[in-house]
Structure formats: C-alpha cells, structure tokens
Image (cartoon, rainbow, N blue to C red):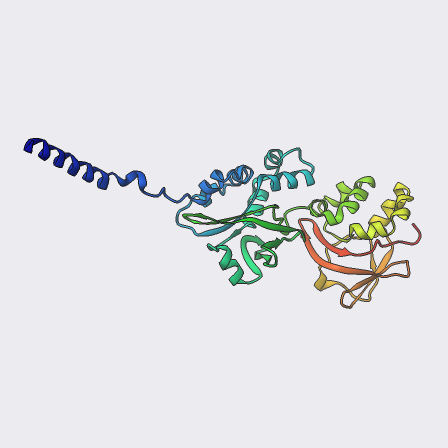
Length: 318
C-alpha cells in the first residue's frame, strides 16, 4: 500500500510539472504583420494590387509602423466598374504598377494611428503619396462614424476600425480613395457619381479620347443636378450642338484656382469666350442671364484640372 501511495504521488507530481511546463499551447499567437492581416482579413484585391505595385514587402516590414485604410474587395470592384474594367482583377492587371503604387500610398499614413488617435489628430492626415513633390492629405470627419474625402471629392466610410498588426493598424474602408494627379480628367469624372450625366454626354459626343489625352486642360464640370435642371434642352441637342456645349466648358490649358484671371474673358476650346467673376463663390458668365457658381476647385488630374460648377454653360450660338 505504501508503495502504491508513493507511485500515485510521483505520478501526480509529474502531471503537475507537465501541466506547468506544457503551456505552449496556451501562448497567444504572434500578432500578424499588415500584409498578413490584410490577407487573413480577405482583402485579396488590395493584396494583389500591393504585390504588383511592389509594396507587399513594405506591409510585411517589421521595422515600420503604419496606418492603412484598406479598401474592401467590393470597393475595388466598384472602382473597376466605374473605370470600365470587367473586374477588380482586370483593373489591377491593366493599371501600371506606378499608378497602383500611388493609389495605395494614398491609403497609408506614416505612423500607427488607432481610431482614437485619428480623432485626436484632427481632420487632416498626411499620406505617403506625394504629388508634384508635396505630401498629400486626406480629409477626415468624425460625425456619425469616420468618413474620408479624397481628391476626387468622393467619400469613403471606415467600416471596421483598429485591426491591429505587429507593424501598424488597418482600418477597412468601403471605397478606394482616389489621389490627385494619377487618373486623367475623364477618369476623375467617372469615379464621382456627381458627374455621371457629364460623363454620359462626353461619351455621346465622342470626346472621351480627347479629354483623356495629354492636355493639359481645364474643365468646368457641371454636376448631375446642373444637367437635370435643363434636361429637356440637353435631350433636344444634336451631337454637334452637344459637342459645342461641352467644349465651351473646356480651356486648352491648365488654370488652377489661384491663377484664374478674374474679370478677363478667357477663350474656350469651342472658340467662344466666358468671364470668371471673383466672389464667394466665384461665378462664370456665359451667354445666358444666369451665372454659374464654381462650387469646388482644383480637382487635379494627370492631364489638367477640374473645377465644379452648378450650371451648364450655354454658348451662343450653339
């Protein structure tokens, strides 16, 4: 009996030691890198774009600490559709690696910022993407969640925040953020639903090739509501008249808002002039009695600039 007791005591001691020493299974798994977190989170389009752009190694680099606004697969699919591609995969395949790199860098902040840090840091955040040698910024709003406005004047919403990684943090967003200076004027209009009627008119007039060309151009871009206000007139225009109307909105050079010659007639691509008037907001005088208001300026494209107007400009004659 004594021998059995000693054996049971020894067995219990060994069991206790094994339990104490065998805790490896209970150790927390190592935190993934940003690259691994993106892959684990199902951001396959983002991962494919980062690989082609040569940025996958950056997201896997343990020496960095970054914030990534990660578009969902659905966000990439939406952008692909807007730009005329059949799928996100087709878009990633077609776009140059440098373009993809610029788009992705526009989604990255140079430091780790959780949601609370973003809120504390203010409405403007500097990205890793540079345009004309200068750092670009994103405009954030924290009313009713976190939203982000990009250079195309469109808004993304953070759908999942604070996906932590060993070298940073991911915030999932429902839209691909479009940076300045990478897409051409037609593409910048395509990615903003505000310009859906304008894009349709440009295609109907077969001007998309011209406005996608080298330029540079300045386009006074009427909104969807501006076209809707004169829908019956626009629908009655011939193709040549529609072409005249659209080219009346285009200057054959890039004129940023800081360089607008207020009060001086400027000649459009149509050959007719218009006058831009100083004010808050500035207005444009065309052949009609009602001026157009410039409601947003300096949407920078790779081949020029867009200024947004709230009225369709009418030349005389058509």
